[in-house]
Length: 150
Image (cartoon, rainbow, N blue to C red; front, side):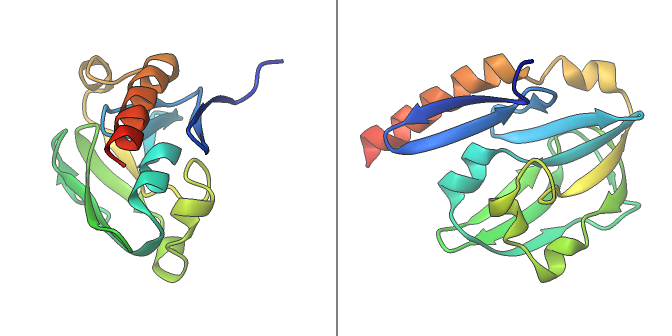
């Protein structure tokens, strides 16, 4: 049976990409669950950004266009704006992140999710997203570039 994850190693870092997700080029993942879209940040994005100290996700009920700010993540290195990969309405926010923002670092594809969105037009939004294999290629190129820059 195939692993749930694809993996690649760049320099001394191992990055995992979950097979059942779609990805933006910027490392935001979407996983469809019973017609809803669970959204979070990829393993690469959380590793590249550093230890998460604070997360601010737009509240439930917020309507978003694809590309609108879904969340802001504050790390030791930077403040990261996470854009929504799909248009729709936020149904649920991961309240566990209020007390434990480090869940994003510890389990980016599981307990570290950001929000659940009711997609407005999944078929249109999906066209702009990458499957796991394609994202792995894009992410690997981004990681190699980051290693070159030091």
